[in-house]
Length: 617
Image (tube, rainbow, N blue to C red; front, side, top):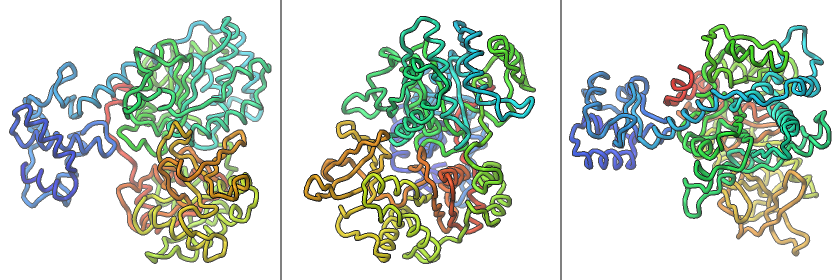
């Protein structure tokens, strides 16, 4: 085992941090067995790689039998390893104070065990709660007005209406769906329903908190709410009660100055809210979700909105996917179906696997009908093939010649875009570079983006940004001289609450006619107002002709160029490719060889945690 530890460390599978944590843990406990040292290091590695815990039975053996393992290295059987861990002073159970927790075959760093069990307990309490003080007659009338049955086939289930019923009737609700399935439309109607019920109950105001993981996602949420709120079929007094103020999760929780993980709002000082809506919930990691739910007052509703098929959070956990559970047809427990039918008159389907008791399955609604892409859309068909893990069908869609899907091989040269990609970026960015009006320039830039899987490497973001700038300069569209050249696009990388810019915000360097044509970074808001900042005031940022797929979450563009690496990699997954493709509203152009596309489609993200077991078992 000592040889195996050293080999994994030398191969880079274990970081210096993993090693130091493991050695520190075993040294303080007086533990000398190499099996415990290796397990502690691998538990640290698991969290670093996005897992909540180390699943000894599922994730370890492939690593230990991989190329990093030395010839002839022996490792104990799973049962022998588990017995060793159970007998170690480093490892304990839920009620102990040991640095590691063993639960079945899952080994946790105690901090993450606490996050997971605390979140599961708090959600469990909400899952059990049904809202009793509802005006059923008024609710039926509101549902019929906000969710008319026009366009539905006889007997067809209106899943958006069903999602609204779940959100109103329960204290916890998850609404998952891909782009164009009407998530925001549904949520705005839910907020109107809740506002109407609050007025009927004699409340002057319903306190609603709208949050998203990034500043860009929060801004997009606000834009969508403003658009959909104007279309609501409600009294103007109710429309005025539907809020549009959004913020990042961190800003809502109010970070303690000088701390990255402590917030002013917590269980002892909860958020002053009646409803908490979290958009882009797939991007929220376990630690942040646990702290957010900690800060939620017991009476408040929690609504998670997102796409379970998108990329999971950068940090540990895949909370939305875990909570949504395995794919299944629409259906609820008989008890909840009866309750909803009594409340609303709607005929609610009962799950085939109904065990009688209400559970998390009564809180999850999956929106599948797409209102954005027309019938036969290449983007929609490609996204479905990717989600299904069907590489052959995905390749067929890419090669079929759809108007909204194009496919090219990856550029072969290490220092050039290649003819197809070059033509794509020149055409995609030409409009914004030819605009004179700053707002029109900004809007035109937001219609196209290059997305890449990697930050570094021959086809990573850093390389592509330089190559795109050179290509545009060669076309006479751009003069990338100096760091603050005109029309340089900027992506903010960190939140800066003092300046009022947030991770994911996009701006343009433009001359300011009101200040002697000095170079300023222009940022436009959803209301159309502009902020012009001197470069010295900007938080950390980078050029953004190209951005990683991870950074693109929460954004949409008319057209995207998806640039895949020349070889498959660990970061290239089904979820990454799906997320990239579905950033496009009208057209996607994929640059990647067939083998790389197939590798991505057939490689789903797998993150170890106990959330699914705790909520769905």
